[in-house]
Length: 198
Image (cartoon, rainbow, N blue to C red):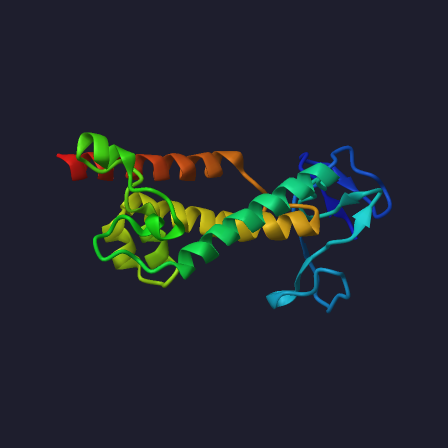
């Protein structure tokens, strides 16, 4: 069997190391059933997941985390999930703000001083509704809170599982996508705040 590389006209035989640490994913067509680790898909299409010289053939190889990176990912993931569980334990305030006061925190100082809500007012209430599956009430309490809750609700479990496995799973981390999502949450929070105080 020949393994295709990302350079035109080049191929490596089994057992021969590639010059690239990561060899592009390649579909190997076969007319017979194969016992390769990746299994056989429809039409006899296989993903060769065998490893040669530490490099994974025909699939992306993601670097393993250091011990410190794993610990940090696990702690952040657990922390995010814990925040969501706390939000689930709270009773959403009927007024849409002030749910955090049930945890012993004081009222929003921004409202006390300026008489208008701050950008984060209603976020705790929004999360309390979100963790109950009520997206409409969550949006009404604070659209930015809903967006942030969905964002961290995805990031938390992903970081926890990836930290436990020692590598990103089930997909690699693309910083540009994480940054874009974070900026989107920030924009939503600012826009909804401006609308509320107008």
